[in-house]
Length: 269
Image 1 (cartoon, helix red, strand yellow):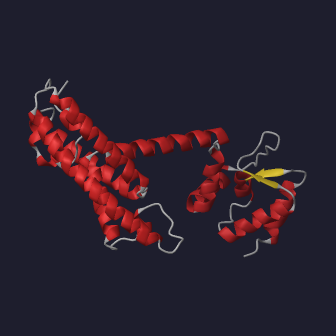
Image 2 (cartoon, rainbow, N blue to C red):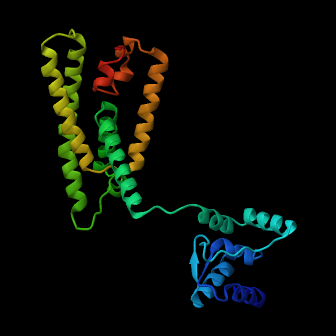
Image 3 (tube, rainbow, N blue to C red):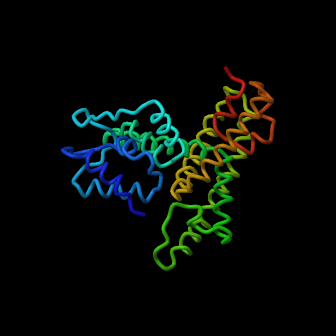
């Protein structure tokens, strides 16, 4: 859809002698343009004249359009009515990140995601959830691409992944079973019992292997986030029910959730 001759003349007059113009200024020049295609045609016209489109007006190119009160109110109303114009207006007020800031924030996000996965998969809750997901993949009830961050390009990739998951899940289940036994034994021992150290070390080594193995398959984030939210909800429920009482150690929900120091330290100051 073409822009009108009136708008085009207004634009040409406005940009005379200028090298750049902001989105906000374009909106003020032609507040009646609410059509996306027309707005795009305006941008193309300006670029064709060698005028750079900037996010905001620089000091050297500053140009104030005088509007009476009624015109300003109408402009504000149109901005609210038109999502595209409102988006450009808001975008013009937000400073862009520098390259250094982008790199820093990307590293922070990656480290946070990695720490979150370490914490989740160190619990029996997270390990059990991952095993159930792997089982769905093995039974072909879930596509590998829906569960894992992998690309299946070569022939036989799916069979290879499923066969590998079959081996790994057997080992993970064995470690889970042994950790369960050791954790029950640990609960029955006194705090200063010399046997505790060896049992805690065994649990720690098995857990480390399980975490490393599960993370290797790069489960998609939306699964991990959902499981994390479920675990947090469980912990909040237990806290509300038991407070700091060690009676929580007899709750089967806790036994099914974790082997880590969280359960063992419950009720201690």
